Image (tube, rainbow, N blue to C red):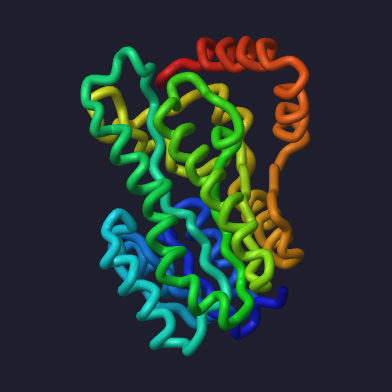
Length: 269
């Protein structure tokens, strides 16, 4: 897949993976439709994309609102005439043991942003993607493949994404619309500075072990773009992640033990 003059929608494009992905695609002369709740931040991303050779518009969007998602898709179509790629990237995380959660609406919020936001955007974009024989990209996580302590709600929302897009891929197999699910591990973004805590409010936390193991965001984005170009069905980004998927099949208790040890060794700063 060549991205020059292709219309690409990216949700959660105000920071982190979404922002870096937008700027990298701008350098390939893509038409970018950038969505996030923070209008000033999304306009800044659009400006950087234009400076790097792409066409870009900023569309303030709350992906938990179906009407916002519909407007995002219609704006993309009205502006550029077609939709070739939808990147469902918007997401939030959490850091809390389930037994310590004080506000159960935390789980609803995670599902709305990480899972239902992807469903809404994909629903409204699908007719246009079928017309262009385009590509749907889901930015999921390794936690969508296995449970991680302190991330129960986040992991559940990513499992939901995985199941939805795996099912959709089969439904679309005769339409020439491809579905790519990407599963990063720890990536060096500021996302973990805005995670939800036990009371459902944003906390700022820095987890030492995660930081030391984090993949640079530029490397993560390069892998995503290569997978998009090849129209792959799935991307697990690290050898450790791929080994973990295999090991889970033959020694699930050992994987659980290692996950628990890794989380217990983390310390909040």
